[in-house]
Structure formats: structure tokens, C-alpha cells
Amino acid sequence: MNDISPAPIAWIGLGLIGLPMAARLVSAGRQVKAFDISRARCELAAARGIACAADAAGAISGARLVFTSLPSEAALVDAAGAMAPSMRADAILIETSTVGPDASAAVAKTLGRIAYLRAPISGSTALAEAGTLSTFVSGPRAAFDAALPALRAYTRAQTWLGEGEEARYAKLAVNLMVAVTAGMMGEALAFARKGGIAWPAMLDVIADSVVASPLVKYKLDPLRRRDFTPAATNSLVLKDLHVLVEAAERAGVPLPLASHMLGAYRSLVEGGAAEEDFFSAVKIAERAAGLGVP
Image (cartoon, rainbow, N blue to C red):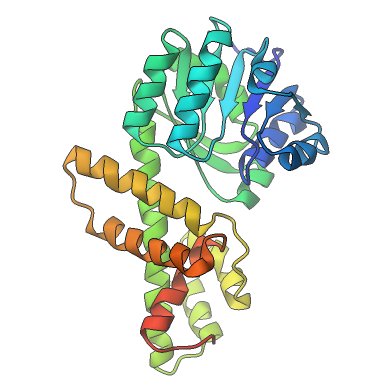
């Protein structure tokens, strides 16, 4: 497959991170027609130069590249089944959501001969706006090469991992580390406060330490302000951890840290914090230690 830059692009799903990703394609000079079940999201998309169709079929009509950014495995499986009969035979479905390998394999079966790239992303809404997400991709190498110019519009790094479901495992593995980092930060900060270290002082210590990963550095300023405006919500992370733990159980891999964080995020969601940023997990350790808001 050759680069197919002149062809229009379809984008299905304009959520918190899907919309800025689609907008990056527009900024790169690509024609994008999208669909989302939310009228409000379509209105936001229109303001950013993205044409919204009345339905998914209208969005994918004539498109060679069809992107999806959907909230659940069920939504992806349903969308693939609905779209497959209407997609061009030479189309490429580029799926960017976080789903498990079994659901992804079911999508591949539904698509049949249509090229299918599993292309989940890593990063925040801010990185999506800046076009500096990273993506792990698996599927036909020729399809990856053809889609690469479009992938580069919203990512800084694109790693091809193989012909099958490898990208799904990579994304879930990274998400495990992200969730555990949030829990680890909460425990470390609560422990430091019990030792008499002020909240902002300990955040400064972490910023200048060996543990200051890009994720930790990104979250330090919001933590200083106790600002839990979501880059990714607790409900979303809970969903991803469910997918991860189920996939690990089927693969025969014990993941005690993932199981612990699954319980932690379930408690946040059930406690009314479903739409807070996932780093509000720091509150769990605070409450367990009998600490109030710093």
C-alpha cells in the first residue's frame, strides 16, 4: 500500500481525546468527516474544521482511512459490525481505543479482508492537542506504512509491533504502570505528610528526584493546586483496568498490583469521583492515613 494522503479520512468517536486527535489531522491539511452520537461533540468538532456526518455510514463513505476512538469494547465491536459492509475494500480501519486482545480479535474477524491496524495511544488530552502522543501499532505492515503520514499528524512516536494483537498488550501494560504510578504517588505523599513534610515541599522533592517520570512531572502542577480536572477520568481508568485484569487472567499472568488498583478505582467511582482525574487516587491514601486536604 502506498501513502493515501489525498483521500478523505473518517473519524468515529469525538470524545475527550478523540476530538483533538482528529483536529490534528485537519491542522495537517487532511479532510476529515466524523461522527459521534453526541450532538455537542459534533458541534465542538465543527468549530475545529471537522465535518460531521449524520451517521457513521455517512462519515466513512469514500474514506480510505477510517479511525475509531470509542469508549468501550462493546462500542467498538458494534461499530465494526455496522461499518464493515459499507467500507471500501481497500480501506484501512485504524482503531485507537483501549480494548483487550479478545475483543480486538473479534473485530479483525468481523472486518475480514479489510486491513485493520490496532493503534492505541499513550498520553494526555494536552499531548493530543499538541500532536505529541505516542502510538503502538500492530496489524499488516503495508497498512501501517500507508497510514504512517496520518499517524504522524497526532503522534510524536509510532512503533510497529507485529501483525496481530501485540499493540493491545503493549497499551494495557503501559496503562498498568500509569495506574500504579497514581496509587504510588498517593501513598508516598501521605507517608511524607505523616513525617512532617509539607505537601508542596514533597512535590518539589519528587520533581527533583529519580522518580520524576514524564507522567509524574505532568501531574505535579495539578497536584500542587489540588486540581483534578480530568485528562483521563477515574471511570475510564477503571474500565481499562477491568480489561487489563481480564486479559491477564486469560493469559495466566498474575497481576496483584493491577488488581489492587482496580479495587482502588472502583472505590473512587462508587464514592462519586467517577469524573475526576485519575490522579485523584492520591485521596485514597490520605483518607486511610486520616489526613485531610493539605
